[in-house]
Length: 124
Image 1 (tube, rainbow, N blue to C red):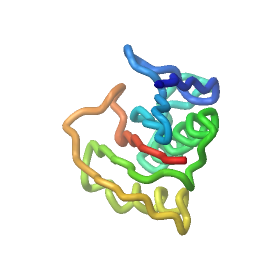
Image 2 (cartoon, rainbow, N blue to C red; image 1 turned 45 degrees about the vertical axis):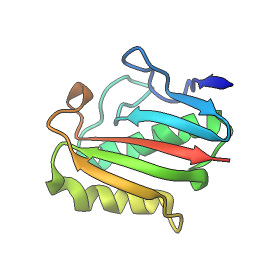
Image 3 (cartoon, rainbow, N blue to C red; image 1 turned 180 degrees about the vertical axis):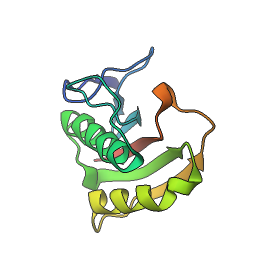
Image 4 (spheres, one colour; image 1 turned 90 degrees about the vertical axis):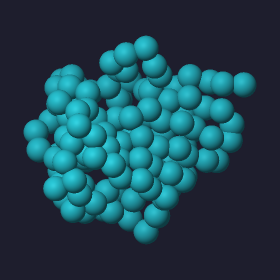
């Protein structure tokens, strides 16, 4: 059974997809960019966009009954690999001692001109 997840504390999907889908025991979170859900605007700078994308992921996970500590895998898409170190620092602070598996790739373009997009899979 699949359950659609929608958090009012994360930006609305900008296409025909869900913020996340639960297929027990997993939750698959769609990619989040640094949109502030209160304003609908993309925040400035790669560090701020990373913080906001992770906050958006956390809001979706919490709504689904999960937490960042349950994340098993993330994928990070960067507009430029030159931002890897800055994104890595913010990411490390967010997850603390928890270390999900991760892939990081450079993408030629991201939605709304974002500098970073992050998706994840969490498990109960």
